[in-house]
Amino acid sequence: MNRWLHTHHFLHKLSRAGPILLPLAVTLAVLALLTGASPAFSQTEPAWPPDTAPLEGRPVLSAYLPLVCSPRTQPAKEYALLGWNDLGMHCYNADFRDLAVLPPYNTLWAQAIRRGDPPVIVTTGVTATYVFTDNTYSVGKSNFWTYANQLFGVNLPPNIGLTGRGLAGDFERKADHFAADGIPLTEFSDSAPTTPDPYQLALVSLFGPDGHLLASNTIVAPVSTEMHCDNCHFDGGVEEIATGRVETNILTLHDEENADEYPPGHTGNLMNRRPVLCAECHASNALAAPGVPGVPSLSRAMHDKHSDKVPQTTEGCYNCHPGPQTQCLRDVMSTEHGMGCTSCHGDMEDVAANPNPWLNEPRCDTCHTEPAYAQNAPLYRNSTGHGGVYCAGCHDSPHAIAPSREARDGLKFINLQGHDGPLDTCTVCHLTQPAGGGPHSAP
Picture 1 (cartoon, rainbow, N blue to C red):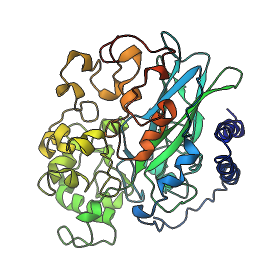
Picture 2: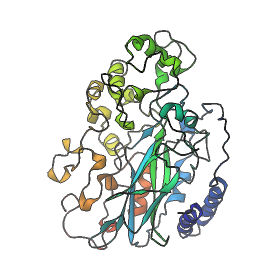
Picture 3: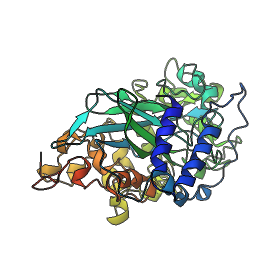
Picture 4: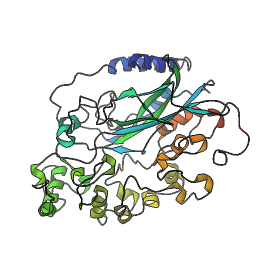
């Protein structure tokens, strides 16, 4: 779908919200025109990392709310469009010149439902698209593209990720949903390119075969570089190692402790082979990287090594996972029921012992034992329920189960039903209120 046509549809929808929002729609149009064109990319990246402002200084959410949802009840539509991020948070390295744990790689899913009695999930005869209206480029916000070939053996065009996706495009059509895997999104918006803003907004739209807009929604694509290795691995912090950078302090320590055990084909100090992809040796299901036989997976190595170094609490997890500012665990279980990371995942020894990390994760039906809440797939993110709708379509992503602490997570629910999630208004999908119980008591 042409970017300008896509933007036109979105702004047209905003302008219909009334005279109060019309000036805001015009403002957004100007912003889109100023930032929507492909930027000029120099062959030499700027000094890295950029001088970033603290997360507390990110743009105030209230400034965005009128632009992405109307407080008025929306007229009845033929289609409802659900969308979510697969994991609830994607993280990537802030600097790739020395080592890489994860690349910029965000994933969005969507389901299109033709309203009716009964509603029908559709994937044919329609096209689903995504676009980040205030995050249209990544080169210059991350130095990943400078080192992608050395790390992953691929020469990537600017702003194109490892799956060939950019920051706008069509979803891939699946049997019962749409997916956009591997979007190379950073945490920096175009309007504030040095201020971390981990809850980025994507406009997802559904078009008919003639290009007519059928439905749209605004969903969060969470992304963060807040991995605080610097809490321990600062100069002099561990074994008095001081190389001038946190990453090289880590590689130097790894060489000192393990160089005589490096497997065949991977010999030689890591400091002399930078940049280093950790998954080169340590298996990572997140990257579909098999690693080297006999070498512990990256998850096992990291959690086992650090199990006695940080508290076994959510705050302890935030030493490595995003983070004391990002606070990626933001779901209703944490905000209203006092649950933390260890409530579901166990302590670090438990996580280290997981034989298949990323693919063997906590199940909701471990606690929600009623048959109506049973998962029909090993992972919550792959499970479906009422009418074939994915659990995340109504309840949102792992770590962001609605209602979330972050107001932006609620925008898509407000757009659909006029209030925050979970999705509990039957007539979002049904033309008339169905008789009987709710979705967990009906097929």
